[in-house]
Image (cartoon, rainbow, N blue to C red):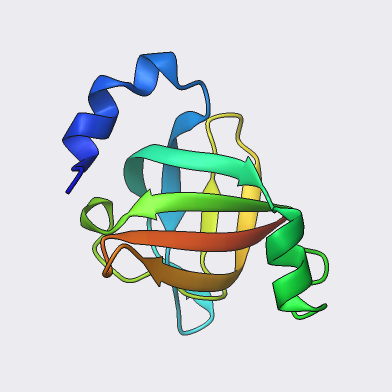
Length: 110
């Protein structure tokens, strides 16, 4: 099993690894942010677009974050603010790697 610490050791060689701020949504408001290191941002693949069949229309990108980096499980409605101060709203969240990592389909927010 690869740990987030092992990923961190390679993050300098992987330009898509970012430090972001995760804001869980609770009761209609966003909680204060949690710093998340080694978050990976990537485009949505053609295979993912085909499998979602319009369910996520408007989703722009996918963020991968490690479970141990957050105190609450990411869900639809949460937001991520990246290192360029761009806000991304989570449209759909999927647990991967037996719950160790989250795949978050996001759209650019305001």
